[in-house]
Every structure is written in C-alpha cells, then in structure tokens.
Length: 162
Image (cartoon, rainbow, N blue to C red; front, side, top):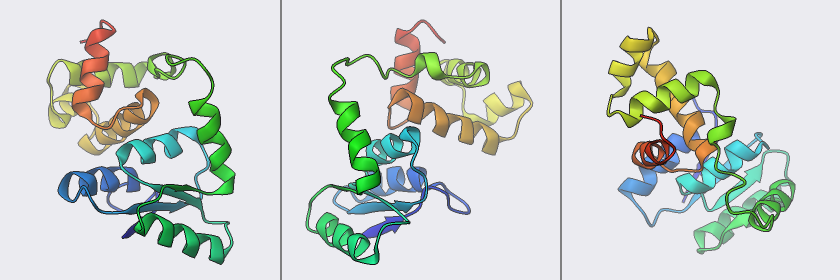
C-alpha cells in the first residue's frame, strides 16, 4: 500500500506511480493530493493509482479509501468521482484525445520524442534542461491520456507528428 501526492520533491507522484506499477504491478497506490484538475486526476489513474482522494477529505474518508484500495477496490473521493463519471459517460470516445490541448512547446517536445530523441538530446536541441523536458513530457502524457513515452510517440506519429 503506497500513498503518494501529485507534487513531491524529486519525482512527481504520477511518475512515481508509473515506476511503482512497472516494478510492482500488484502494489496498491492512492493519491492523496490537493490537485482537483482533470489532467492530474486522469494522469494519476493512467499511471496506476487506484484511489484519488483530496487532502480536504475527512480523516475517516481517507482511512476508508486507503483500506478499500488495499483490499483491491478503486476509490475516488467525492470531489473527483463526478469528474470520472462525466469523463466516462460523455459519449464521445475521441473528445479527450489531447493533441489539440498541447502547447506549441509541448508539440515540439512530442515531435522530437516521436523521432526517437531522448530527454538530453531534446534538451540540447531546445536549449532547455532535461528536467524541463521531463516536466513537459509529464504534461503531454496527461493531456494525451497515455502512460508512457512509447504511447505518446505512437499517438504523435499517427497524428502526423515526428
């Protein structure tokens, strides 16, 4: 059982959940965070979180959610459950493809990643730091609804980028 926040000092909770999922697929991950935005919520779920609770929740709700996720359930706090349902029932499977929401800089990073460049090569080409490229990639994954670089690159190539 692992409880993470979206924003952590060295590695985002989303990136940590993704790494945990790769290393220990059976691990139960709950996000306990103050971030209510759709991008953070859906990125966390795609990264492997089975629970998403806002820090403002009552202590009993937090404990109940952690126990439920440890028992194999998926739990979304009252503040985010409606967003999950709305996303799943909007009736348009392509409404959230995310490519149209990318900033010009994110499109450039995605294009270079789709060409096979690593973070350091992209950073050198764009005159940015590798950490900045990593941050852009995390935002891209969230907007595209993908779990990793390979999926993002595949989506970019299908859309004519890269």
